[in-house]
Image 1 (cartoon, helix red, strand yellow):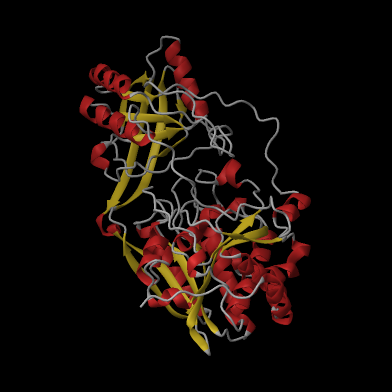
Image 2 (cartoon, rainbow, N blue to C red; image 1 turned 120 degrees about the vertical axis):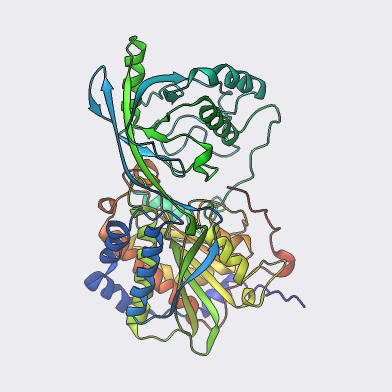
Length: 548
C-alpha cells in the first residue's frame, strides 16, 4: 500500500518552533576558517586526478580516494556504488597540432570526447565546408535569446531537403583533407563584462519570502522546444556530417570554439562511438579565424595533428561515491549532501565540479569534527555521469527511492539533499523542492550567515530535470536543495572550458560555503520532524526525464 507524507503546519508555526544550534554552527564556522582542509581536497581531485571523465581510470581513482579520505575522517560505510553507464570510457592521452604551411605555429585546441585517435602524425591540406543552417531561434518566453555562456546565437536546424542535398554534394570533396566545418564566429570585444558578484539588494529581493516576484526556485530544465518535422535538430546535423566525413574519407574534423579570450569548450561526440566519427578537435577561435583568412588568400593551408585517445571498455560500469555519518534515534531517516565528481577534459574540472564535491566533503568533515551525533544519518554522495545527463544521480534515486507515484520504502525516510554545482562563489541562497513551509525550516539557519552574504531560500514546485543533480531528487518528488552562488567567472569563463582549473577557486568563498552547508545539513538531521513535503493531493505532476 502506498503512503504519502502530509504537509506540516503553516509557516508562522514552523518559524516559532524552529530551533537552531547556534553554538555548534559557530564552532564549525571557526573550525573551517582556522583549519580548513578544503583546498587539499580540491588539489587532489583536480591536480592529482583531473580531468575525471565518466568511465575513465581518472574518475575511478578520484572516487576511491574520496571514499578513503572520508573513512580517514571517521565516516562510515564509504564505498563505490555502481550503476550502468552503458558506454566505454574515453580519455585523451596526448594531442599536438600545428599550422605547417604557409607559416608555422602551434595550434591551440581541445579534442572532442569519444572521437578516435589519428593514425600517428598526419599532415594534409585544409578545406572548409559550410553546411546550411536555419534562422536564428526566437528567445524562449520569459527568457533570454542568444547562445548563452558566451557562444554564438542559437539557430534552428536546416531544412532536411537542404542538408541532404548539401551532404550529397560535399561527400566527394573531403577525401584526405583536414575539414573545417562552418564559418568562423566573430566574437566582439566585450565592453560590459558580467558582474562577478550579485548585488546585495538584488539577492535580498530574490529571497524575500514576501516578494511575489522572487526567485524561480532553482535550476531545472524547461519544456523542450517544439519539433519541426521539416528540420533536422542540431544533434541530427552533427551526426549526419560526421557520417559524411567518415564515408568521404576525411582525415580530421575541425570545429570553431566560437568563444573569445582563448576559451574552448569541448564536450562529447553524442554517439559515444569513435567508429562513427573522424578525429575531431575544437580549435581556438583565433586560430580558426587565421586559417580561414589564409585560405581566403588562396594559400594551400596545411595542418598536422598527432592525437592519442584511449577507450576503456570497463567504463560501461561507473560509480557514485557514498559515505555516511550514522544517525542515532532516527538513523533510518537520511539527509544527503553532494555534488558531481565527473568533469569534462579540457581543464581539470575545478569549478565544475571538484569544488562542489570538496565543499560537501568538508561540510561532512565539520559535522564529524563537531562531535555532535546527528539523529538522522548524514550521507555524502559524489556522482558520476552528471555531464552526460545527471545519469549517476538519476540512477541512484531510481534504485533507492523511486518516485512520488511509485515510492520505495526509502522515499518516506528521505529528508533532503543539498547540492552545490555553480563554481567558486559565495552561497547567496537556495531553493528546496516542497511547499513554502519547507523553505521556512531552513531560513532561520541560513539567517546566521547574512554577514557572509546569504539572503535566504525559496520553495520550488518544479519537477523538471536539468542543470544539476538536485533536480534528480525534485523529479522524484523529494526535497532537492540547490544552492545558488555568486557567478564569479563560472558562466563567462570556466564552465566546461579549458580554463576550469584550481587557480580559478576563491579560498575564502568556498570555506564559508562548507560551513553554511554543514549547518543546514545538521539542522535537518536533528529536527524533531522531517522537512515538510507536498501532501499527496498537492504534489506537482510528474515530468518526463529528457534524453540528454
